[in-house]
Length: 94
Length: 138
Image 1 (cartoon, rainbow over the protein chains, first blue to last red):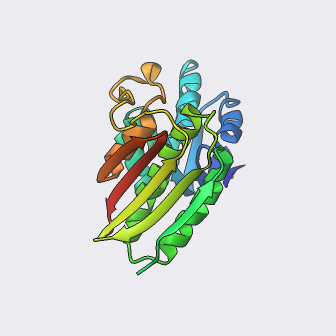
Image 2 (cartoon, each protein chain N blue to C red):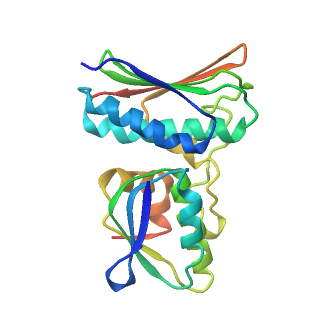
Image 3 (cartoon, chains in turn orange, green):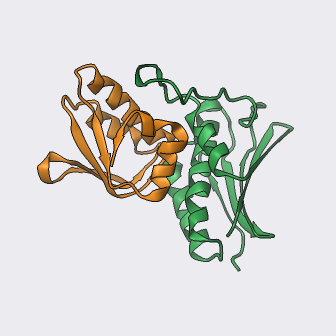
């Protein structure tokens, strides 16, 4: 189960599991963004390639207007997934 | 030491929650190091979703099994009504070095499985396709 909420400073807060079963719900939220956002991963336990695909689509759309996503507080496994995918080169990660 | 666990799940992405519960129960009762869990969980999802998406017309359920033997977690995914498609050799590799504008999510799942799992085996006999994933348990 993936929960998406808006936290302090208008950050997007992800909680739970970002898998293929949850990707469509997330796609609707992320593709509706029209400006740069910080996405807090502190409570996200898991992401698969389906989740990466949603974030990639959002990053591409935002980049057309010079905006983008900044991803913060990833756990070690999720950081590995981003590194193995080369996504650490296309997102700002902190 | 845990016993093997297994489940037969429907050919639907909604079954991922059931697979996650199976993984949860297995790792809750096993001596495998907790860091083994993420790679196994991710590999099961990627292989399962691959089977669902590329063989939506298959008429069987898909069977998931988890075991620990000889210091390895062994996860098996079996589709009993599948054409031959070996994800270890037939899936195109992603172009991970490309810049943002050129990136696509295609091929990422199997690429991640290959990165995170120690050994992957594929067999196909009489329309039964089996993918077996091996990950050191420590």
